[in-house]
Amino acid sequence: MPQDGGPGTGGVDPEQLWLPPAEPRRGRRPSFSREAITAAAVALADAEGIEAVTMRRVAAQVGAGVMSLYSYAPDKETLLELMVDHVSGELPTTDPLTGDWRADLKAVARLQRALLLRHPWLPAVLMSTRRTLGPNALAFLERVLAALRPSGLDGAAKLEVFAQLTGFVAGHVGYEIAQAAAVRSPGRGAAEARYLAAVAADGRHPELAEALSAPGHPLTPEATFTRFLNRLIDGLDTDGQSY
Image (cartoon, rainbow, N blue to C red; front, side, top):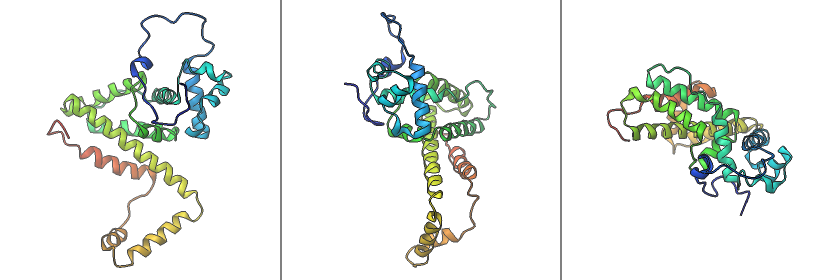
């Protein structure tokens, strides 16, 4: 039965979702396209958050009846799959690679981060459950695998690196978004600083006290992301073929 379940509530058959039907659809030409419905859902999520995306709200956005949408997306989980692949189409797939696989992989991560920041609902959706790979996501994966060719990793390890990188970026951007929201809360940052100072001074956390007394690193979101990304990519082991 069609439903408005949240992220991760059901499974989606990738063959039914992404492969063309064996026989062309017959009957009256549909009034709406799957692309238009997906674009409306993305616009709604960008403006109001993923919680605002329901079949009823999306139907209202495109001027359709709710029941008519179920032939395009039988439930919200399917709609989320369509939305993820739709925004994945913003990722470039034809820019020339440098041949330096670590540098190219870092460029990939920066592209992913920019995409997730443009669509703040996306990190939570990516992390909520395993997602299928639609045509846009597959095109980007193909580019990443090409970037990893000079690494000498086998196919399984390349796929693991892609999954590891995507998980890192999604988790980090989710944290960035949460931190930005906390900063907007009056007094939140100052209260956290006072709390940590008190904990460090109680004598029971000497390691924390030492860490907090060390010179700090630049704390801009870009600088923090770059430090974490460098540690991840530069530390990848290519001597073995699995991790």
